[in-house]
Length: 382
Length: 128
Image (cartoon, rainbow over all chains, first blue to last red; front, side, top):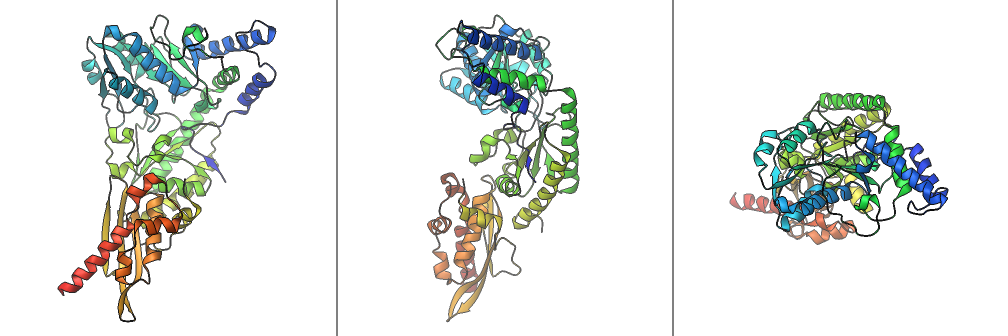
């Protein structure tokens, strides 16, 4: 048996998506800037897709810029907003639990002379709103806060954060790569100025993402070239990717999200009940429907990961990016997990294709392997 | 990322266990790096010389840490104490083919634990 439980890293493209992508690679392969029929067909697909994605977040189609993915969207939003608005001040704010694309964009800006405030989070991973209010000064131009955390799944109260930013008149960006289509996003109601999205986290193709840029928001483009994407992102549009992205968004439905959350809860409860000395990281209730970040004390995550892999089960430690680093993840450190305990963290992320049988199989293997590794560990109780 | 040899030792380690009544235990590691090892030895005699009769390790750590712990025991068992003290990082890596560079600094500790266990054993014996 196999169980793919690393959907936070990436997902299988839905067969319906693959069909659409293929169509735009082999039949409707025109360049959306071309005036002939094939080009206009591509243009139509581009604008239809833009509309679908805009509608999903209550935005106007013109406010959607297609990019190569979440990382590019984060870079464009953060650096773009910082450079374009630096006359208004040089202070920018983010949190200690961002994805590396945001974290490293802020670090780059810090090296260039911007002043960065890194907000703390509480032990469930929530930003302290009072601290946010206090940190915003007359020199602050941008706040970037991740919507749903990629490692521990905590979903921030984006509406409250958006309101604070609006009141204080600073731009608000959110990395919504993990949350998009899993948690409702209404850019108007939530006062969001910039939001990053990616297709491959929701059964869409890799290499395609989007950035929501609220009408009137000044950002500096990163790629010079043609006039594509409202002059903000040059380059021939990736129509197969874009059409596949839109298809993936259309496929998501409430019922599957509910089913995923139920399966996740079933799995978490079983693990916490039957495997001793385990901790669920993040919030019990305000978390991504497909995320279970679990710490198994006294063992190390990479060892568990490869033991599970040997039995056909794919998971990740903390976050996929951490797997080649020896430092405990910055997110787990930020929520206060001591290093030795943080090392024992494993992330299970489900998808619409995850079955109860796969989770039962995973649980059985997990129970056995955790016990084996603990027997080998000098920290496990005698 | 890991060689087949590394994975073999990781999946089916022969010496990763606690030892009842060891003659000495060497403790090394740092939980911040995610690696702690307890190296146990039992000392015997062969041709009038003291040898490592048995060795085992308990390891809290990654694949590299577990795998190298197992290899150290393979290399140590049957060797004289003097020979066993000389087992080096390079000997272990050679035995495994290779290890990812990032893992070599942090996770290849078992040889230090073994050395510590032997030295403690000798100290204890000499003070008797």
